[in-house]
Image (cartoon, rainbow, N blue to C red; front, side, top):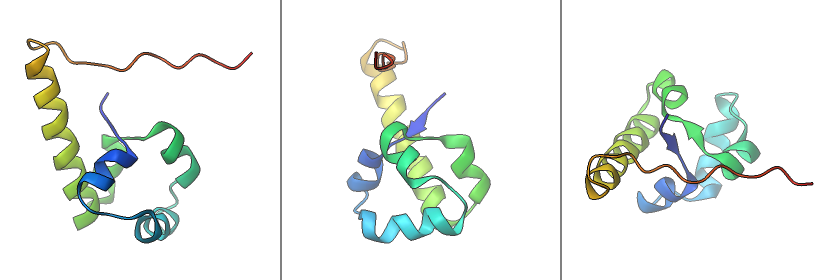
Length: 83
C-alpha cells in the first residue's frame, strides 16, 4: 500500500509544528508517522482538507515513480529489525 511520509508534508509546505497537533486531535501516532509514514487509507478516513491534499500529492508522486519504473511500482526496501 501507499504511505504518506513526512517528505510529502514538507513538499506541500506543512511544518511539523502545525501538523503534530492535527495528528493528536485525530488520535494518530505522531512518532510512528515520523518513523514509518501512514497508510493513505487512514488519512482518507479523516476526510478534511489537510488529509485530502496530502493523499492527492502522495498518489501523484507514487504514480510518477511507477511510470518512471516502467509501470512497476517502486517500493523501498523493508527495514531490518535491530538485533
